[in-house]
Image 1 (tube, rainbow, N blue to C red):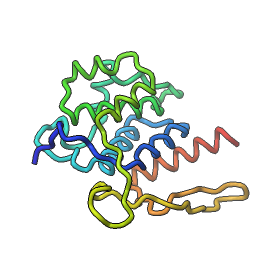
Image 2: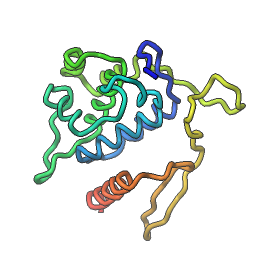
Image 3: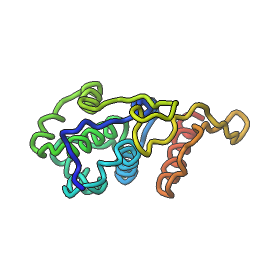
Image 4: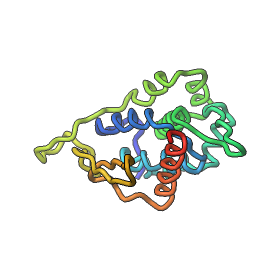
Length: 196
């Protein structure tokens, strides 16, 4: 079943809230981690983006895909931390926008032109252009929700780790895949090293 790029993408308001939360994080991702993050967001918020007969749209991003768009200048060069290339929020935002533009079947040359010299706010504006943000309905009636969207979390779980240290998880957080869990642990370790 082919996706219809003319039909607006509908995502819950929680996707916008999640992007704001990610922006506040001190991200330091590897290329592979960036790929996992982008594919996970697309899988959760735009389930139909993974289906269809267009290979650029079906299936998830790969590191090779992102390197191609980095070579085209659509994705900023990463920061170097020692010998490792690290990607932050701006790269995450750029990758999400590239993924959206591919879903809309925008040609690579046009993507390159759209990405050139923009601020993060301009990237966000482009990312949410043509996307319908919908509130989740609580009455169970059709029309205000996205299929397969998890319930909007209402509370946080607190997990004490040590004196003065705790982890906060939203209720109903999906169990992470092994690669995602490793990234979470690396992010926690990096944050602790920077702040302690």
